[in-house]
Amino acid sequence: MADKPHQNLAVIGHVDHGKSTMVGRLLFETGSVPEHVIEQHREEAEEKGKGGFEFAYVMDNLAEERERGVTIDIAHQEFDTDSYYFTIVDCPGHRDFVKNMITGASQADNAVLVVAADDGVAPQTREHVFLARTLGIDELIIAVNKMDLVDYKEESYEEVKEEVIQLLKQVRFPSDDATFVPTSAFEGDNVSEASDNTPWYDGQTLLEALNDLPEPQIPTDAPLRLPIQDVYTISGIGTVPVGRVETGVLETGNNVSFQPSDVGGEVKTVEMHHEEVPRAEPGDNVGFNVRGIGKDDIRRGDVCGPAEDPPTVAETFQAQVVVMQHPSVITAGYTPVFHAHTAQVACTIESIDQKLDPASGEVAEENPDFIQSGDAAVVTIRPQKPLSIEPSGEIPELGSFAIRDMGQTIAAGKVLSVDE
Ligand code: GDP
Image 1 (cartoon, rainbow, N blue to C red):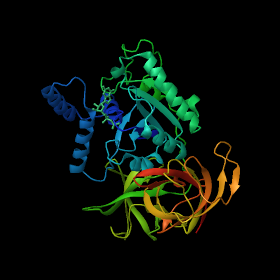
Image 2: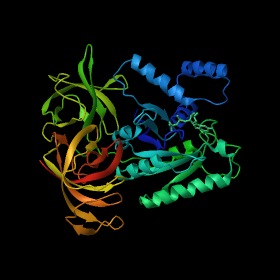
Image 3: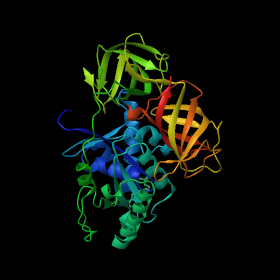
Image 4: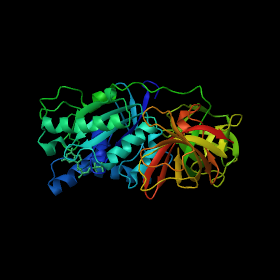
């Protein structure tokens, strides 16, 4: 795996705009879908008399196969280009996509935003772009999708492109860096091959744009931080926590600590892509086994780090938050659910310390009584259960979170400081 760098890619966008179809198309056109799955799908599509591929189907099929197979592999889709190995870090087919995106996007280096040409910017387009911005996605590639439904018209493409540029400006995403591609995931236009249907477009295909993304910075110097996604029991091995190495390295023989569960031991084996490896680096999805750790000792939301420099557990923390959408006002005492890396913990906003000017970031008001949609603020937060979180200035990967309430993401933020 060492011949090309890794990119963790999030595919974001409004429901039904074609995320699953695009992921399926990318996997298919890069030869990453097993032949028999395509064959079976082709037969079914023919029976139904369908023109293009329903890639959501291929995705479901792959998920089923994985469930039957060895469980140590994490539910990730992979493909490669000349420059990179890509891992899709969330499954767009899932029902609660935003929730996945919060745990997924904080791990993603870059993202593809899918916007349907016949619908334009929709509520979840806004929500996902906002989250991508707050959670530190570096670069966006925007697929203006379903071009077949607008007769491949350049005006329709330009209209949607302009809407997206306005949105990027609103959240202060550096829109100059964003690449736009007119696509049809369903028909396969401009995904891996330049389409004859868009003669007015002479830019990159989606795969070319992916191939040209800047290389992610690999934070191997920082201490090991590995948020636990799941804990499996595998016969012959024992308890196998799985997750993605965010920073540092994990090596067999290391003494590690899981926080906040506060247990630890020596790393016996590390496995990646079904193979034992001596060491794992940032971006690697691993399953590993730690001497003396049972399934009930640790849980999703724990963070694994070196025993001598364990992950920080916050008594309280200060954070900068941006309120995206809240039906009324947020006051001290409010206790929504915080999603930070793989953890979900109810946290109380103890005090609202400063309201910030959202454009300049300067202090606009000390100790305001409340904040509301559109406001940025510095707040003090008390987790209701132990939560491992780090100042984003020290370990950015472990320093961001989203706040969810009433089934939607209402705010996102980053950690300024932690009181242990
Ligand atoms: P998601 O919810 O964003 O993952 O969207 P899906 O990939 O499930 O797509 C939603 C529907 O739109 C499905 O019926 C797809 O077949 C269809 N679809 C996706 N991409 C395209 C496209 O480029 N053109 C057309 N005509 N339909 C598409």
